[in-house]
Image (cartoon, rainbow, N blue to C red; front, side, top):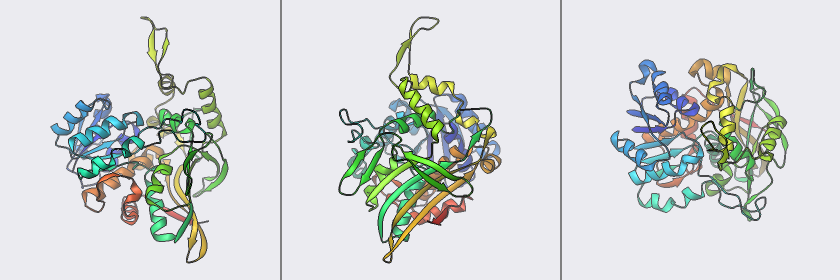
Amino acid sequence: MRVLLVGAGGVGTAITRIAARRPFFDRMVVADYDPARAEAAVTALGADGDRFRAERVDAGDEDQVTALLGRHGCDVLLNATDPRFVMPLFRAARNTGVTYVDMAMSLSRPHAERPYEECGIKLGDEQFARAAEWAEAGALALVGMGVEPGLSDVFARYAADELFDEIEEIGVRDGANLTVDGYDFAPSFSIWTTIEECLNPPVVYEKGRGWFTTEPFSEPEVFDFPEGIGPVECVNVEHEEVLLVPRWVDARRVTFKYGLGREFVDTLRTLHLLGLDRTEPVTVPGPDGPVRVSPRDVVAACLPDPATLGGRMHGKTCAGTWVRGTKDGAPREVYLYHVVDNQWSMAEYGCQAVVWQTAINPVVALELVAAGVWTGTGVLGPEAFPASPFLELLTAYGSPWGLREQ
């Protein structure tokens, strides 16, 4: 297997450090718009970097990506960029005939008249619109294969196959007790992506009704997270699992709730109130005349790079899937989860916990694809594949998962 990894930020760098310890691929080309970032990711591997090479690429330029895939004879494109670049990379992979893997799906657009009641264009709609084309070509696009979405979807499939006869509700619940020394506000993941998913109308799925939307931060609940994290208030957030799980797993209701915390929610509300969440450029004065800038890009530039925060971070992050239903005629409720301690991920990989937890899952998936354990054609989510081989290999990577009876 020869992999083109596009994106050498926090998650992309963590992917290289995890993959360097595994023998399943022959070459990984690490490409970024900033060649220094790509070079730094490869150089940091030292003697383990023999199978890696750094390149420059503009992820929004399909021709550049296509040429790079061909020049290195890659048969997989792994997208570790932010969601703005999903569609050009997705199209480049299809045009080249290679397998495509991402961790976030094509962007949504709210309903023009009823944004908090009806879906407009949903996450992943642009990709699923081309599913027949991928299937007819015998090619695979594995979408939403990070931690959330990704591992959370694998948990949903595992619950359906192994733990339940009937499922009433699947609810992805994400929480952490992470703190960052020296910062009052320092998101542990891309603020661009966080703004996108938190301020868009959240989507809920109900059998018989289908997908519908609610107000941002709706339906708050306190969820008790394992391994010392404890109770965290979680709210509805737009996320891919709600759009993926019902396509392959039979459940009466599917939700996603994120443990943001009151201060974080208030900050996001303020950004929205001021228009600083907008992606459309505005004109501002510059030293050489007016310039056009995106307010959201300015916010991101003013905050620390999440990849650089690991040494200041303390605590744990938890991604998991809560499932309620019946087994052998009796009610059952479980929480399947994956916890990463930042102290461990920094000591073992030099990566902060949130980006490392995201990065390990596409590497596990690629190894299963390389081994022929996960096979398929079309545009498929993680729950389209058997879950047990993934969870076994995740444990073999030294990162076990847990199951708690509720």
